[in-house]
Length: 478
Image 1 (cartoon, rainbow, N blue to C red):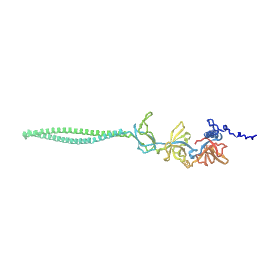
Image 2 (tube, helix red, strand yellow):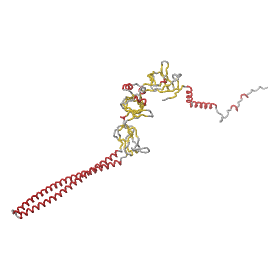
Image 3 (cartoon, rainbow, N blue to C red):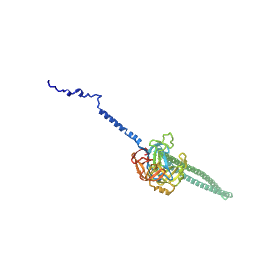
Image 4 (tube, helix red, strand yellow):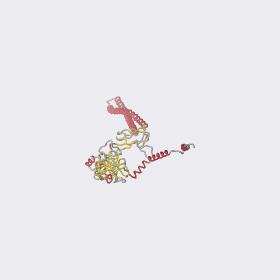
């Protein structure tokens, strides 16, 4: 029997099972799904990391209230005496406008411009008024030119009157002389007639005396006629003088009228100038070139009421509203310290200048004005201030020498044995800070050492709060 052959069927390769299935739309690798799921989970963690963290913090961290440590001058807090808030105002303040309606053609200032008294701040349209002034000046010159001629005529009339009066006087003298000759002729005639009757003279001699008497009478009548003419001429000369004097007076009146017209035209032209009534600074500009301004502008009108507003910086003072309950501590002439909100560390000296005679019933305050002892470039109108009213000069000097201190709310203090400190907020973490606490004033404690001012401290810290613990700020005033 032939030897049996070995069975090689186990060594066959099943090609149907070994051949991989063709790739298709439903044939996917499981690793792709895993990577996509991990990416989605990573994105979700990144997007919701902060909300989830905040939620965990709200559930786990203590919620606290914070307040700032304030650096201030002790006198500015006015823990003793009276104090009031107020503003810097200018006693001398003016809204400038033109005296006549018109259109602005020139503005020479802007906010902050320093102007001297009489400077031209702005101008209105002035061509028409300028032409009227030129005409008025020409009329004045014309009136002035007629005055010398009128005066010359007056002088000529006066000189002519003098001549006529001299002629009248001479004629009057000739009349007197003719009258004297007539009287002499009459006497000679009467004497000759008597002699003729007595037979001492001839008829011809008597006739001569008669002729001489008639001639003397004729000469007297002629002299009297000349006198009447001279008197009439003198009266005419006086009339001419009166007419010439009236002409001079008329010329002078015309000059006065022309001068008044010129002054009126000049005043009208001057109304187109907006001038500074005092030296100061422009704090507001209300109009621009091309706009119409009117001193009588009212609601509904398109015209501006004023061009600029300016104040006298030398008249700056403080306007403070003092509560009625503190008014007893305020006396005219008493010293005061003025603290600017912008620079609260250094006080300004001042004195109470005047107290308003009425009160504000709604606010229960009385207005008080405080004058500065000295002014500088930091003072500006409408700046906020705090005024501390003092009793005497000694208190004023003591408060002026006070050093600024740090003050914190008394609720922030934590006492651990003999140590006193506060928790300072630092990037969401409470840091223990030991301090040297001083006097307590109206719910605030003076910090003599340990804080510099500006730090945020925890109010009413929980007993479980420790150094470097994370916290959640409930209310942050900063």
